[in-house]
Image (cartoon, helix red, strand yellow):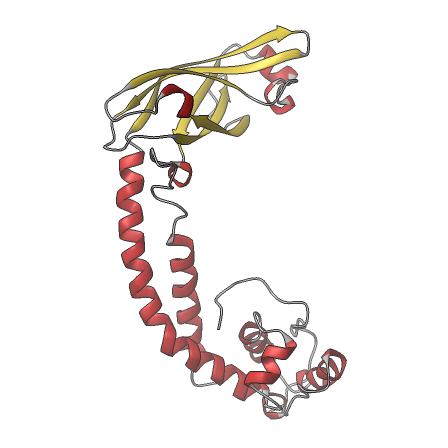
Length: 258
């Protein structure tokens, strides 16, 4: 079973006003005659399910197409389908969690190192040219990490007049290929233009123009860091997938006796 939260089109929301009856979970479904026939049989079965049973079935088929459902559970009942998916998860998820925890440990170590690239003496200005106001960020970057970089990505947040919530947020791609890279221990001065030729409108509002104090923070995004070979150093974090599978496993455990 693929672990994902989103529901497929065919997985009908079953939490409707339904009668209390014990037959719904044990009514065979029509899985071999197309989606319409499946929906009709499912609607009949739903009449005999309570809300928790309906939600359990909806969870079980959330990532199965009608073809996959027929291949794995031809003509089976909702109860059999739920139990089949539960057993599949109970069998596979523990090993997947162990592997993802190892990956997360490696990723976290790399991300912590990348976060040693810091931004200091950061300023924000609104410069006016032929195309209008141009939001610009200038900063001094210090590479306190062990890595050298060909590319970094930054999350820039703009705070106004002492607020603790950012008024504007953007991501800035920072390329070093033409500067010979950004080596470990090096300090560089960088300038970023927020937006393209006309500037980012979210960073030039009247609120921003009239603010008495404007503060920009830059935080490196580990997923975007590339080494001198232009390879991702940390890549995408495995943590969201790890947490998702953990949640899926807990759900499976709660349904194993259904």
